Structures are given as structure tokens and as C-alpha cells.
Length: 284
Image (cartoon, rainbow, N blue to C red):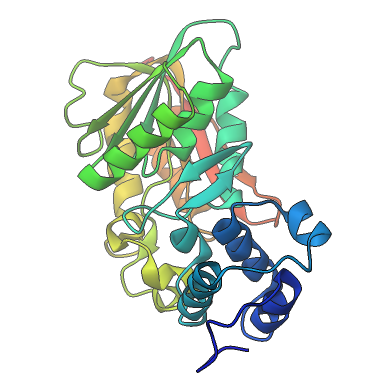
């Protein structure tokens, strides 16, 4: 269908058949929906609609990039997370379903109609902080990230989703938050070891290393957060961390070392231990 004649007029059904031979069917559908600015139902009910040459060329270029490995989220510059749709670029991680567990656990600890302060460390595109702020409008949410580009994207997402109870700032973990305390701190920090071979596979090849990797065993950022957290937590406040599949025991020990109580680890829907956390006990 493509090649020297790639600009010929084709229908939705024809161009999808071509794409299915080259990339995943769901990826093909999402890319065509993006090009045509339609939903899945439209594709199903209009198989004979003819694409313009511009639409065909745009779709062709996206499929070629997907064949080369570029993640669909970066091609469409958006990804659904929880019940929202976020803007994403190559400056931030691609939102993943397993991170929804961290949001669930956070929301369970935030009163619906009471004021509280929540901090999201390493916010990236803002998926955690913005989702929490959306579902807990009485909460005062602060989101922080070292990357200026990530902060910009998080602010775009907050504005797009009309979130008014959030502050998004540029900074390095707790630095710049001197004297500030919170009722809940959440984070999905970099936790992949620098030399982990998975970094050269799949979508990870295209994602920002600064948001993926941590020194040595991948626990450096988690150690820093847990050690610095106590002075920024109100009594009985919670700290919740997403981590790697084999890091739960280490996270729990770090929490024990810093006098946290009610320490737990929770698996995601795939059965992988994904989040650990604890409640800060400030008693001597």
C-alpha cells in the first residue's frame, strides 16, 4: 500500500490492515485515532471513509517511528492515567498502570472533606499529584521535580485539567521546602540500577534516564527520601513509595531505621510488590 505509492488515497479499513502487518493492532488503532481526531467507535463504524493524502502521510510516518521503537505515548503526546488524560513528552516518564496503586493508597489516607497537605516528590508529568488533587479538592498538594521541562509539563496538565489546589515547583527532593511539613508524602522516584539491562529494552530506551535510574542498586533516591522525610512530616503522617520488584524488603528496613511504624508493602494487579510505606512516629 505504501512505498512509492504511499500517498494514494486509502480507506480506514485499508490503512489499518496495512498497519496491522507492521505494528501492534492496539497501537495502530490509537495512532489512527490520533491522526483523525476520532474515537474507536468512529473507526469501527466508518471503515470505508477515505483518508486525505495528508492524513495518510502523517499516519505512515507515525507507524514508521513506532516500528523503530518510539513509544506510542510520545508519538501522540498523551497517555491516560487513572480517569484522566495527561500530556507527555520525552522529558517525562510514560504513565504506567501500576502507578495507579500508589494513587489508590494515597487517596485512602486523605480525608475527602478535610484540609491536609500532600507532597509529591519527582512529579514528572504530574500524574500522581494532579490525580490526587483532582480527587481530593480539599487537599493542598505540592509537586516538585528537578527537571525544568517536567515542571512545565506538569503545570500544563494541571491547567488543562482545571486543578486549582496544587503548587508545582522546581527543586531537588526536599530542598527548598525548609520548615514545611506534610500529612502525606508520595513518590515514584528513580529506582532502576544504572547498569540494569532493561534500560536498553522497549520503551525505557526512549525515556529520560534521570527519571529512571538511581546509583548502585537503584535504592539511592529511595534512601535519600526516607532519611530526609521525618523533618517534613507531621506526627502520624504517611510516606508512600513506588519501587522495583525486588526492593520491598530494603524499603521496609529503611523505614524501620527512621522510626516509621505501620510499615507495609502492597502488590499491584500483576502481583508484583510495587509500593511500600509507613507512618511516621515522632515519639522518642
